[in-house]
Image (cartoon, rainbow, N blue to C red; front, side, top):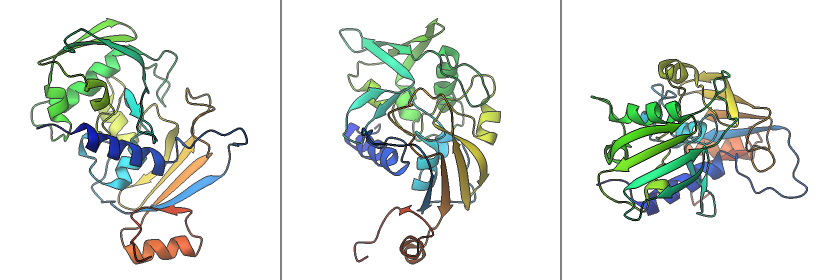
Amino acid sequence: MGPSRRGLLKTSAAAGVIAATGLPAKAAAKRGGTLRMGLNGANISDSWDGRTHSDQFMVNMGHGTVFDCLTEVTAAGELVGELAESWEASSDAKTWIFNLRKGVTFHNGKPFGADDVIESLGMHAEEGAKSAAKPIVAAISDMKKMGAHQVQFTLRAGNADFPFLLSDYHILMYPAGMIDEAIAKGIGTGLYKVVSFDPGLRCVLVRVDSHYKDGRAGWFDGIECIAINDSFVRMNALMTGQVDAVNRVDLKD
């Protein structure tokens, strides 16, 4: 059984809020500063391979921060396009055409397009791939490039929730032909690019200039995320001003 829509909404919304890349845009909003976060859920085995992301540290560093998905569930629970600008389905919800956002580039300068989508989804269905999103991709019987910025998906059975499923935090978009390098270095299309990454310890990111989300997200110039798995130490770091935000606050605190 694949992921539920309700579960997907919860995880996507939580990731979007804590990553601080989708804060509500207000008239007085100004860009600047560095957000320092203390998060638990980090492991020394962490990597930029979205197939393996299972806890809060990498979910928040990967999904919507360094990388993007095709669709996005906002903090309000609304489905919007991320790297996909729009989509349409056949009457039986079995065939879907996704129109991709133009003018988007990966952090290494490679333009984003249909080939990246097909290869990024295909990696979840590879033989031996250990991906939590494998049931989502396995439901796709065919992926066809219709143009440089258009992809057609044919599902094994109709599914009106297919666009929601593509916002799953495991299904990150990588540059075609260089996925191994992108996983090793953290090369995505997200609002923030990697400055340094010490698995299980710390991640430092810097804001990308001229991003397609300018004006509505990514208000910090940088993000520093420190792995603090111990609840007491995490709260102490917050109360002493070592970090600006933490996750999984114990109710008694």
